[in-house]
Image 1 (spheres, one colour):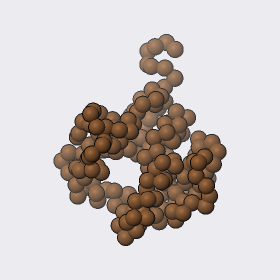
Image 2: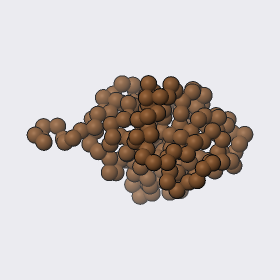
Image 3: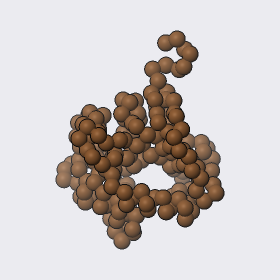
Image 4: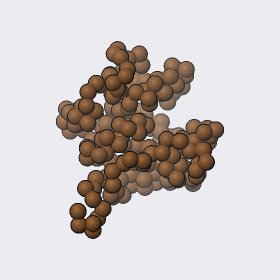
Length: 192
């Protein structure tokens, strides 16, 4: 049975990106980049929605010789979309139509490789709400982008408790936090 990890990079105030800022808020360092390279080489199935697919496949097409995008291109990718049409152009990408939660439940039953999301805020929100996420990991970049931030990660998420199972610091400033999530029906102690 496969495990599912939702994986985000965020600013301290919970944004996934910010206008005018470079990727990784310009703060990626050698230790963090080594982790990305190491994990890209590990066998897993990448899960994403249509917006992330369009973005990442475009980057991969523009930089086919970039080692990171070459590794991502080589990975099997499941793309959940009602707007994209098969066959998808990006190598090793399979379009999954229909209910994403049910498709992921089936993948967890039948897939031998771990499942990991890339971006895809709506997809991740749906998977968390359905209780099918085994690990929730964030890498926090020490910036606050209140004026320029976009793609707020946690808006419209269910209430969730998080049990910390791993933490690491990269390049003396980036914090990785890896949790086991539990979706709550109501806040603790509310009597609901």
